[in-house]
Length: 130
Ligand SMILES: [Zn+2]
Image 1 (cartoon, rainbow, N blue to C red):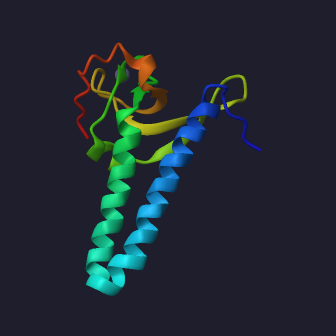
Image 2: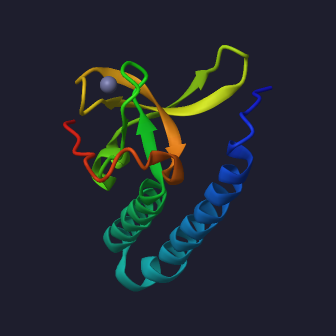
């Protein structure tokens, strides 16, 4: 069983209600839009819902480069297309991470997910490459 670092207990709740909202939107798309507009519009709505979900998460998170320690934020599009992963701390707990290219050192690292409050260093300079 995976253990999580203390901080993420609250974050899991935060993620859960957003996920619930997202599932609700998908259910809505399928139940209402499918019979009304057909499969294409349903697909569009599902993608839009997913986008909204990623956007909500993106606005509140920042990432810390595992290589140089730089804290940065990424645009929604980048978050949408990059993969999430789990990293293991030296003490055996786990942290959420994302495989991102650091805007400072340019290395592709397993960037640790941070809450935005921890990311005041970023100061909106989080332009990301790819
Ligand atoms: Zn870096």
